[in-house]
Image (cartoon, rainbow, N blue to C red):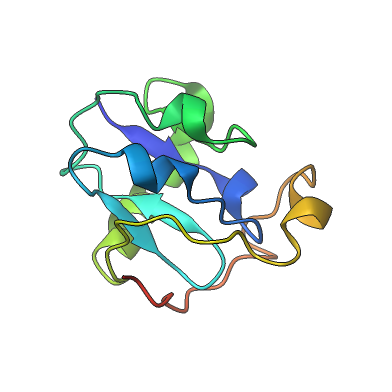
Length: 112
């Protein structure tokens, strides 16, 4: 099992989760984070750290459409191992539903 970042993260990119990850399996896109499912050790420490509940276990049916997206982009985007400020529009977008694919950017973030 692994954990998955969902579209709730899009245009928010809170990184509290990154700071607690013992295996550094988060990768940064321009406007969201993803988890590399083969690197995640299923410890679960990231899930409660996300202030907007964007991280769920892959056993959750909502994770189905995001698991492969997390895998694909974790192989393209740079690794992120430290906390950064959320995006400036995070407060505005944190409660918006169904942000994928309309608000999603495939562009990589900066990483560490």
